[in-house]
Image (tube, rainbow over all chains, first blue to last red):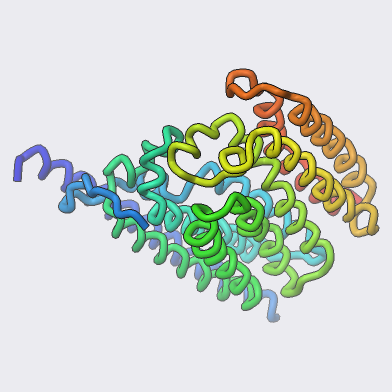
Length: 43
Length: 302
């Protein structure tokens, strides 16, 4: 595989991994907030 | 379905920006807005976190439907100037990636809606995604000039879903909101398809101007505008909203009717001379934003 193409693949993988990590973090926060909101309503 | 020649390098992962483009962010803005308005117009107070999540789910569901639409229509998009640079026809992504992304996003949005709101809202969201993908994209779009008329129902779901997420039930007002967008879609899209009809004709999509002619399409625009006006004024006439919505609705619908009649009066066949069509198309977007904004202002001010 040419070196340049290898660089592009690595770059895209890095970007996607970072983005996925951020989205997963936000999802955890959102699930926590939903749980708290539901508990508040039920109370 | 015709298969698309795959120019994409299989080893190259898709750029995240192309995955985002697959969700049709511009279309999503109107979907999010009408969904939010449906939620805010409901006569119950919604917890901000749950309201935010419901609107997020509507946006993700619309994004999933957009991605699956592009997955199925890659061959069609490649033939039209307007869509040729989308990630799939431009060869920046494999069709399998688009399919996996669309199905995954759709499933996620429905499950999250079920957790945050209720079963009925999740069911309505699922129905809207399936309707857009299966009924409109796969079944109707390439077969009939009525594709936009029936397919318009998919875009009419968001305010209904927003309302159901807030209340858990369906009443007359959300059904009227559904009817407004359902009846607004044909004049909106036919105005567009009049001045880009060569694109649709080249791609073999049986849009009304291609199949039934320009003059007939102009008549149909006015014919659909009339029931749309009735549906848009009905919430006020039926005392489901207050005077703010009533005044805004009458003013916006009067302008819409004048612009639709200007389209009917126009005899031009060249896109360059289709000023009235372009004005109606541009105003129709503003119309929907303003009408739904008036609904929310009316609900919270009075």
